[in-house]
Image 1 (cartoon, rainbow, N blue to C red):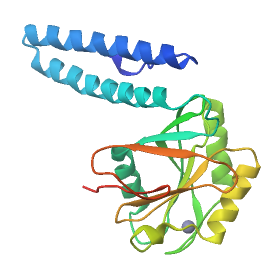
Image 2 (image 1 turned 180 degrees about the vertical axis):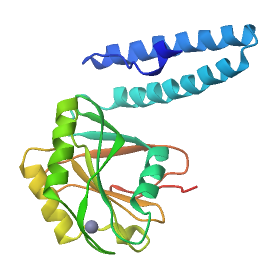
Image 3 (image 1 turned 60 degrees about the vertical axis):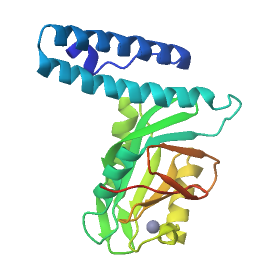
Length: 226
Ligand SMILES: [Zn+2]
């Protein structure tokens, strides 16, 4: 089981990455049927769950493959499940919350999936300010692990797509990050499931996989909540 679980293919070449994911998916399926043949149903179930994950990754990578190659700006690929978790994470109470999000990237394709909390020194319904120490701790940790901040996400009070509009503080904060060389993009969510991606200096694209996700306006999505 261990041989399948943690090791994503290590390669910079996107085609190789896709191919090796495909091969690994086939191996897992084979292992699942062998487990079933041996009546090891619990093991077969575990392989099935793993197979579903690999299937999702492969679908995402197919999506990447059809993106035109000459696009140099970042293309963010997310799934609705992660965004559901993120919205829950960012709206535990009525105050604003801020997090950094990182993930894998392959050339200009970014797949954000990991949330890194930062400590807030001021927090209110409409304002959250992270401590400089906490931001740099997270950035150093990410850098040491070979990751970068892909999204700077926070929550806003209110509801509907308009509640996700960035404030001047949000815009200035992101501008500072992008001026420092980061191509991280801002993300603002509301507890009723709206998510707006925004940028000050760089162009980007967002694609969200999942049934029921509505593209409401440019870079604004409605995520179905559970
Ligand atoms: Zn804000």
